Length: 501
Image 1 (cartoon, rainbow, N blue to C red):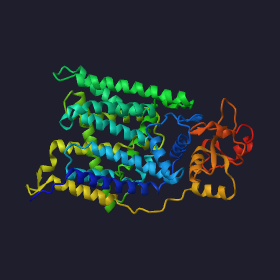
Image 2 (cartoon, rainbow, N blue to C red):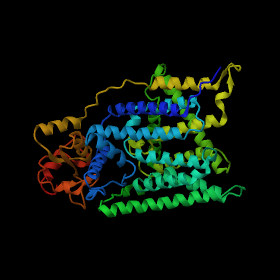
Image 3 (cartoon, rainbow, N blue to C red):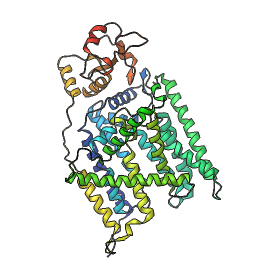
Image 4 (cartoon, helix red, strand yellow):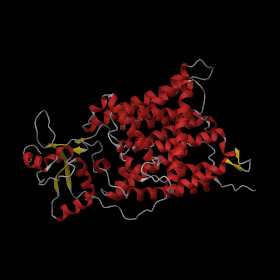
């Protein structure tokens, strides 16, 4: 049978079209979930930058600046749609698409069509839970996967002309510096694995070149230091306050460790569409979920195998080892430090399904499993891979609505505008969300009613907020939600209003 060969240009056009379609699907998928206040806050920060405040003077940030990770996406989205829900959707979808693209670039060369089919089957149709989880830190996941792509080009020299090594080394350093200045999660995701692997190679008694690993180690450390200096320079130039979550510097207790493990596993299974909880034993859905669970278990086996081989000093696929170390290091970090308070803690490792898929396909390529024969030699495993991908795609397809879901904050913004109430206060989860839902026509600022220094009262909530908002003499209402976040209740507002907020 004659093979059909496609030109490089046509391949690029086809892939660009495919990624464009995936982006549209992601945009519509995000439109069916409620906007998150964290994302809304980043959109307001981007708007400040576009209106002449590039260093966010007067702002109270979170424990990270997000200046090179999330903020650029919101700036572009703001330029297109302004401060609006559509801008939030575009930024969110673009970041998720970035993860898929750089995950795709981590697949081994040359990319086999059946492997690409499996990759898109596993990544291009994320479930609602996965989209909800990918609500923060997604920008740093994109930067991290891009850094791994640079490492792939550097450690697989057969794909990189020697004259381009300096280019990719510089790009890797730039990504690490930008990531460090934006979000410290790049340290467990990329830096710790790279340092561990480099030290093993440098200190090994085996007779192999050590200079490349010494160079990589030095470049990584220098890039991290540069990133720290960039962050400090950004804060110094604008005077923005960078909050620190000091409660996260303590290790989990033994009692809470088990609960964290359960939350981690449950969230990961839901993100990967591999959670059989509540599913009927005899149903089509069980087949779809069960198949994903089998694929996922294969991924776990690969990670375990790569980690064992690393500590045994064995040589294997270097990039797969680095990805496996990344998964292991971040998992240990999240379990030891109290990040996982609920299932939504999945936002701290929302890139795992993509990373696992990359590991699986790289393993399939190394073992040449697709060409192995089965059923007495009549079929190859390629047929099984294609069948698995088709079933996963069929199970992942869901109806997409063109209309965005209407949230309580949307209705609230409409009601406030209709009653000429434009400036007021609310708890954090209502405040910036409602402001964005109003297309920036409202100014709802976050407050809390927690005791400070032993004194009860209503206080400004300096988290994703601007200090001058609390000097607004036009503010004349307070929104109280049913879940009374941070003690913002009707009784407390009546008791404290007019005293400090």
